[in-house]
Length: 106
Image 1 (cartoon, rainbow, N blue to C red):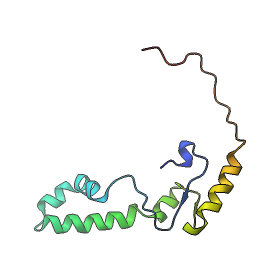
Image 2 (image 1 turned 90 degrees about the vertical axis):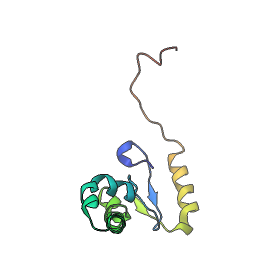
Image 3 (image 1 turned 30 degrees about the vertical axis):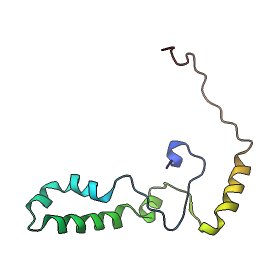
Image 4 (image 1 turned 180 degrees about the vertical axis):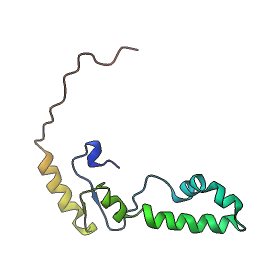
């Protein structure tokens, strides 16, 4: 998924979207490896921490605070909104800096 910070023109999300850069299981295993290794029941702690990580960081609310998308839309309105977005960007022209050199032949 692109974001407006990356130069994407329009980013929309459905209410059921899961937005996150990391898989909660992998993130918890990397971040809390020491705590999990010391726990009496490591697997249970890993699952609990992964669930908490997902609830805190892989939600639309967290992504919205970071302005990763413009709006949450109703899935039933997707077709009409995409049609409007295509009409909006049909005549778009973007001025890019001139490049003195292209790719070198390999």
